[in-house]
Amino acid sequence: MKLIVLDRDGVINEDLQRPVADPDEWVPIPGSLEAIARLHQAGWHVAIATNQSGISRGLIELDTLHAIHKRMHEKVNQAGGRIDVVAFCPHSDSDQCNCRKPAPGMLYTISERLDIDLSTVVVVGDSLRDMQAAMATAATPVIVRTGKGQKTLDNNKGLEHIAAYDDLDSVVDALLAPAEEQ
Image (cartoon, rainbow, N blue to C red; front, side, top):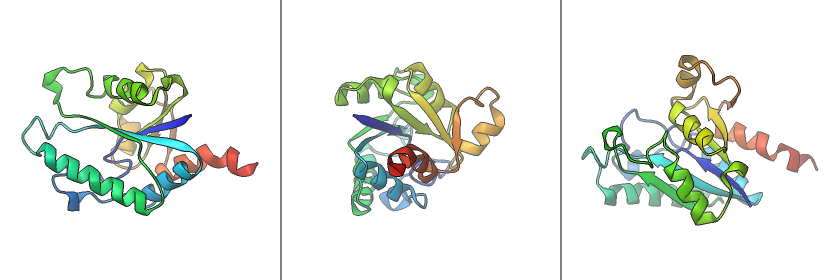
C-alpha cells in the first residue's frame, strides 16, 4: 500500500491564520483537490493529520469541525479523489497530549487504522511541527511552500535535507513521475 499523510490547513486548503470556523471558510488551495484525485487514481491512499486546537480553545465546536471535514470529503470526491482517514488533535499546546504535532500520535493512529509501516509513508506539511512528527516516526517528510511553508523554510535552518515543493500539486507530480514515465 502506498500512503501519503497530509496536513490540512496550508496544504489542502488556505491557511486563515486562525481556525476555520465554518464549512464555507474551507477554501481549497488551487490544484490541491485535483492532486489528491491524481494520487487516488494512481492507487495511493490519502490520510489527513491536522492539529485543531480551536476546539479546546472554544473557538470551534466538534460538530462544526465534522461539517468542515464533510465539505472537504465532498470536494475531494467531486474532483475524483478520496480521503481514507482524517485524524485530528483537538488539544492545545498546554494539554501536553501525544497527538498534537510535533508529537507523532496522529501518525501512529493512522498507521494502526490502515495497518501500514510509517517508514514507507510520505508526510506532507507546511510547518516545522509537521516535519518533526514525520521524522519522529521515520516517515518521509516533505514540505510545501503554501500556507506557512515558505516562512518555515526561511526561519528554520536544518531543513535543507527535506524535499520542498511549491504546493501539493508539485509534490504529486514528483511522486507520480516515475509511474507516469513507464
